[in-house]
Amino acid sequence: MNMIKVFEPPLCCNTGVCGTDVDQELVDFAADVAWLKERGGAVSRANLASDPAAFAANATAREFMRVAGIDGLPLVVVEGTTVLTGRYPDRSELARFAGVEERRDLGLTSAGSSAGGCCGGSGCC
Image (cartoon, rainbow, N blue to C red; front, side, top):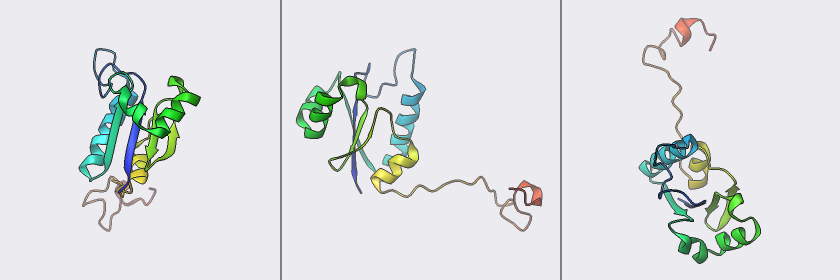
């Protein structure tokens, strides 16, 4: 599996999911990271406010900050390659970057998967 490194703008805490004015994008990203880790994926997050040394120690992040600055963050790096900038990856992107299969729930129940099919057997879905 690939190691995903996420270099984030300055956040109030390590995850950014704190305080009274929580950013839904960060809530979703935190949930997606937890989902990926449950499946064996490896993700590290470096917050510029609390872990500037991680930026300084990583050549890709250092060069990115020199060229794009804080406004270009977040920066997502996989095995040394920049794969995404300016926004957080969604769950399917995280799965692809990590090399983890994303199993989709099609919403079928055992009754829906029988001969009657979904949508009450109409075949419309």
